Length: 113
Image (cartoon, rainbow, N blue to C red):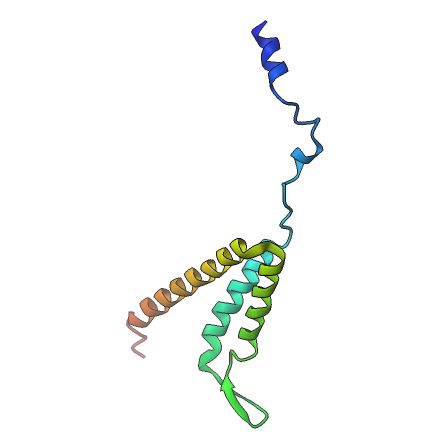
C-alpha cells in the first residue's frame, strides 16, 4: 500500500515535455565566454609588439581588443547583466592567472648557453 502512495505522489517526468530541456537555453554562452577570455589573454600578450597601420604606430592589440567590446555587448543584450558579469570576472581571473604564470616563468633561471 505504501508503494502505491509513493508512485501516486511522485510527479511523472515523462508527462512534462519541459523536463527534458533546460528552462532557458544558453546555446552559445560557453563559446562566447571562451571567445571573450581568449581575446583578453591574446590582446594582453600581443600588446608588446608595435605595429604600423598606415602612418600610425600602435600596440599589436589595437584590433583584437576592440572585439572584446562586441562580445560584452552580445553577452549583456542576449544573456543579461548577471551572466555578462560572470564572464567578465572569469576573464579577469584568467588575466590574473596569466600574469602569475608569466611572473613565475620570468623568475626561473634561463638557459646558460
